[in-house]
Length: 257
Image (cartoon, rainbow, N blue to C red; front, side, top):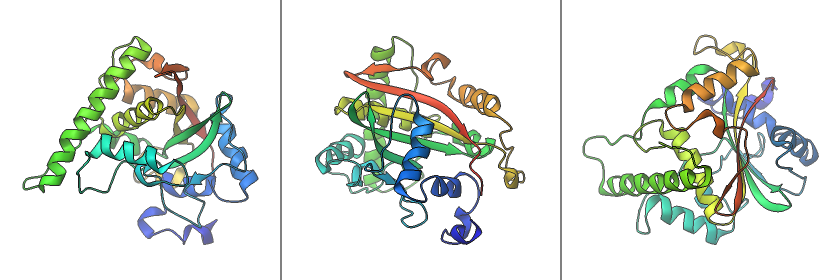
């Protein structure tokens, strides 16, 4: 593993990122089995599916507005317009640590994974999306469209779950945008499994944050983090959004380095 990690930039060799590359490294059968185990029993990944990143060979993480391995380009164009606006010059949307095509209830869907290796990787995500002084007009415009997109998703998730939602551009932005994108995919006819994945016992991270000793500790941290955004019963349930399954899960792994 040490040799493989050298393929990453120095600042990428700690925490959750190298573990995500290891999770998607190896034969297609092996990777498919690992991803299926994470998403079971709600989704299956076969060796014919496609994922990003691709181990240590292709490091690119998925931005779904430009991920032809995963989505029809017409769907990606709709995602970009929804998030950034039709005339935005911005080219970046949220990066998913792992994204894979999969099968959900006999239909083609997406598996999305947000991964953490210690508590600070999650605790640091309570902030909102920020605008600095003298931002270019394009970023100011995208700030507005992103706020509107998350508000649309919030209303849609409230309707689907009959529960109160407070996902927002201005607080807990990362988790808010993960749920907003999952909702929008269902709006475009794609079922989704969204996983918050905690890598357990990442001892080398002690100087940066507290590693998770077990699943219960990770689960409690995720639910505490999400509490300002939606009720805890949202997790580990199948919801029907826009006629498509949406399944948010909390999972853990002892993926080694």
